[in-house]
Length: 259
Image (cartoon, rainbow, N blue to C red; front, side, top):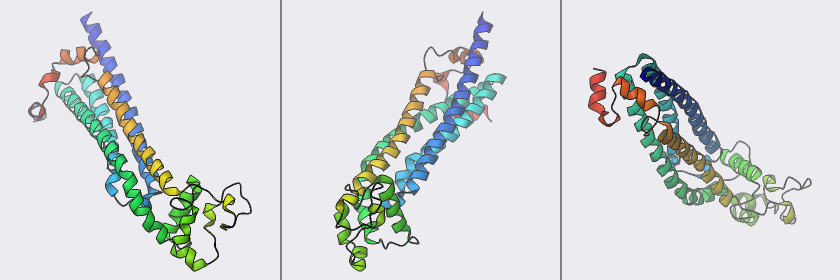
């Protein structure tokens, strides 16, 4: 009966490690998605540390992959040191996920001030040429988010580009998709997007950070429910059988194991 319970617990642990591999892939995907999406809006914020939560969540994904590898090997070989390392890294990942959630909320609150400070500079440097990175960024955002100007299309009247062109029009990226004959003229405001871009850029960046926060929260909850640290988890039966006491796992033990 006892041996049957141990075998069942080993199966649960192997399955748990497969879940960690899947989680690693998802977390790395979320982190990469944040990097790719932020690249489209990098002209609208100067604080590179805003991407720090995404960096951390990719690192967590890499750690989860390592956890899965160590956990599978340790479970199959019934290695006390391997399981001790497995649980230690698992605890480390759980703490890191909590840190990601906290950092996500901290940087999410900073996005609005960061965009407000940067977007003014970007619009002032607009020159309407495709070779200019800032101009491409503005046109991309206005088309993608269906917006025009910082707060509305009238903001373009204060830009150097508007004053130099002297044709009383805004960029064609301000034109509504349904306005086929739109040429950007302020004489036909109904052809232009009415909403400004600043609020929409802030909303978009905050949504991106929420992907990181929710991903970290979801996998922290999964670990709390199904990891070896949870009372009553079937895997604890096998862990106790191997001789790993969860309350005794610390760095000196790991160093002794791998010495």
